[in-house]
Length: 183
Image (cartoon, rainbow, N blue to C red; front, side, top):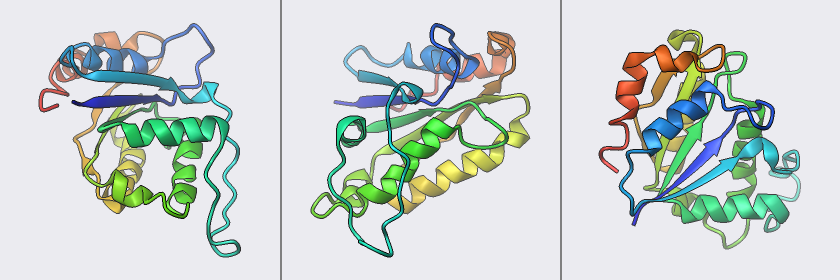
């Protein structure tokens, strides 16, 4: 059975849904009913800053607290969906912190993170003012997927900006309704 982990990287204040989440929820609405969906707002977690121990200790302990919960959720999912608005032409800080922890998880003795990630599908749903300016961020995500042997899926991009701007992007809304067709 498919299990989609939606990782919402928005930093909008609580109670406000941004364009990227709106587009992601449109896409998720057409998933088969038997598909498990887990939604996580990364900004609500207490992920510690990543400390690079690769060239000193060389290994990392098993993470604790929210980082352990995210590791478990990541490994339990068949599909990861980065719900990622473009902030300053790049990855939003909550998602970047989560991705930095992948470096630690690769070096937890006995975890075999890279092997367990291989074959999972990586999807990206993004919004920004300009599609071309989103490309560097999308390329970063694609490279992460390739490094871990994940199946990179064609990203869904929609027009962002003020709240609900994506609702006037008919092409993005149409693509959202078919994004997970192969799921």
